[in-house]
Structures are given as structure tokens and as C-alpha cells.
Image (cartoon, rainbow, N blue to C red; front, top):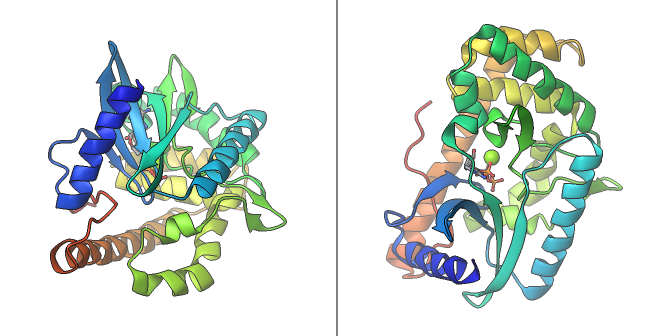
Length: 287
Ligand SMILES: Nc1ncnc2c1ncn2[C@@H]1O[C@H](COP(=O)(O)OP(=O)(O)OP(=O)(O)O)[C@@H](O)[C@H]1O
Ligand SMILES: [Mg+2]
């Protein structure tokens, strides 16, 4: 496993230097992590590479992730089994979070897409309940459907690499990790004015449900919205379809603007400064 991961790390380094991820099996492009497929020893894995960090940050991250996995379990969420491997790379330390690779049809967006209405309702109901019960001002969830899977009839949560936990209103995670992925011009204003507000959504049941509902549009599952809202509105101040639509539009504008600035930044770093750009970026997302 470690050898295979090490060689994957080398492939990723190559992609950072060239800006071309064509030789990698990319399963997902995160804000802070890149998710890569890896087949080794007859097993299939999903490997999530966190940004390169100092040894101290890596130790703090490991601690934070462990606490998050515990907190999720205590709150009734089943996180997908995940192991962290950290090794020296690129002048610092690169944590890799390794999970079993789920089958495409187990990932919730695909799963729901294959369901009839009743089957979908049978998944949406526990999904909404888990979100509504687990999320507190201390425990956050990125509750979008793309972060869940249905494995042997059980809902599991897979997007655990950004531990969302607050203590006395302060993020437990070193938020400079999010900030580092932004072009430098945006870092200060985002850190100072925007980050708390963006993250607040994830720490409020209503915010998390609104985000998940909006994400149904992105996943082309908008026809499930009435079912989702009916279930959600049993738990929170009612959400209306127009509010979800508005949230989705705003979110789409913000993220595509952000992706554009990141592409510009990558061009600048790679072609002008002749430096590696340490993130993988998606092509243009169709919405
Ligand atoms: N264990 C897994 N098996 C198969 N596919 C996976 C697995 N984990 C993630 N994926 C795919 O990769 C996508 C992104 O993964 P994930 O949600 O963990 O990170 P992210 O949202 O991209 O990252 P970040 O939190 O850094 O923004 C998922 O939506 C899913 O399609
Ligand atoms: Mg995700």
C-alpha cells in the first residue's frame, strides 16, 4: 500500500508541475483535496491528497480528523472507513486519506438517479434526519448528496477530509488550509470577512439542508426536491423551492468565479513564475 501511495504521490507531483492530470484517475476535485483512484493488492481505493503542510500542521490535522470521525459516529453518522498516511513530500508533509473505493452506483447521486420515487424517498428520509440531528454549532457537515453513499442499504458519509468542528466558536481545523488554495490576492479578504460566513452554513441544520437541497439541482436530481423539502421542513423553519433555487444560483456563481481565478492563478504560477501549482483543477463544470 505504502509503495503504491508513494508512486501515486510522484504522479501527483508531476501533475502539479505540468498542470496536466491526464495520467491520473481523478475521482473528484475538492477545494482542498484531490481524490484519486488507486488499484493495488487486488483492492480498489479512493485516495485523497491533502495540501502539503509542515510536520506540526500534519500532526494537528491527524488529531483533528480523528476527533471528527469520532464526533460523527457519536452523532449517528457513519463515516466511510478512512486511514491517514502522511509522508514527506515536496519540502513538507503530504497527508493522504485512504478509503475503500465505492462502486459508482453506490455513490448517492448515481444511486438516487437509479431509484424510483418510493425508493428515493426511502433514502432521502434518513438522509434528512441524519443531517438535521447531527449538525450543531460545534459539529458541521458538508451535506451535499455527492458526499454520501448508500452501501448495503446504509447511508455513509465520505467527505471527511475537511473536519468541521468548532470549539468556543473557533474552527478546530487550521483554516489556512482552505485559504492556501486561493490566489494570494483573495486570501486576506476571504480569511477576514468571508470564511466564517461560508462555513456557518455547515454548522446550522437549516443551512446544511438548504445546501443539500440546492445540490440536487447540480446533480440533475431537481425532480427529487419536493420529496426532500417535505422531509426537511418537518425539522427546520420551512425551506421553499425559490429559496433553494436562489441559493443554488448564488453558489454556482461564486464557485465558478473562484474556479476561474484559480485557473488564472495556475497559469501565472506555471507559465510565468515557472513554479508548480499544488492543486488539481477541474475542467469547466456544466450546470
Ligand atoms: N471512497 C470513495 N469511493 C469512490 N468515489 C469517491 C470516494 N470518495 C470520494 N469519491 C468521489 O470523489 C468526490 C469528491 O470526494 P469528497 O467529497 O471526499 O471530496 P471533495 O468534496 O472533493 O473535497 P474537499 O472536501 O476537499 O472539497 C465524491 O463526490 C465522489 O464522487
Ligand atoms: Mg465533497
